[in-house]
Image 1 (cartoon, helix red, strand yellow):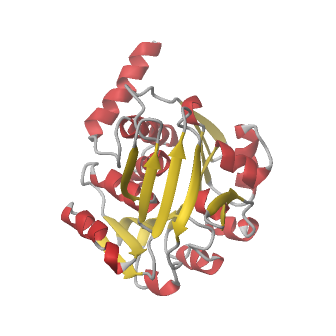
Image 2: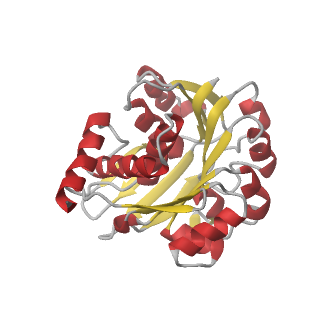
Image 3: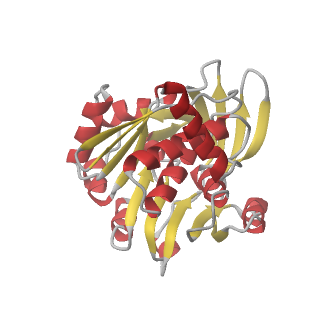
Length: 296
């Protein structure tokens, strides 16, 4: 039995900012796995991923870092172009290549306490696959890929056509400011959380950029601050880092509020450099402690 299993494609990413253009691997599974791997080894973790065999170097590097990876070949590797302006909370995307979707054979004989679905595009995970996973553990998902329609290489926001069917099988759902409006048609985060919970989700995580985040669970709201970074270098993967920190703490049995604060502080460290989170548990805790002292 694995504590946490993340399922998602590794991507090729081209990240364009006003200051530079950087090429690197990415995707929810990539940022999530490296984030978990830098935290104390108190939990077991497995990554299930898929990409073209020609790009296997990304899997080799994960394994060399000590991450348990199950790899399935795909005809193509997902290739994203992410462009940021002065406001790093916003980006435009293009998809230059798509990978094959995940199927039941990919999760055969895998048991986990928590499954995290790193959706990137709307056909990554079928409702049938999610329903099957729900029989084997708590299912967490990032909504982003379910809301991405690709036409002519451009990414367009779209409603989640299967949401009322699928959300019955998802226990933890993470959304950002734009995604919550797309899914519910509402702009008030508190009303959004209640609406999503009414569809069957037990824990709703809303990341609100510089305004912090909001967690709704067991009928209660938990307001989580945004901890200011020393500098903002790269926002790519921040949502995935948040999910990694939150699920790590949830698997340890921490409170919802403590899980959210730890996740937010992990994002602060990740924002300060390109690539996935590479800080330490102690550095994350220090950010939370420093903030508490400042507001006393």
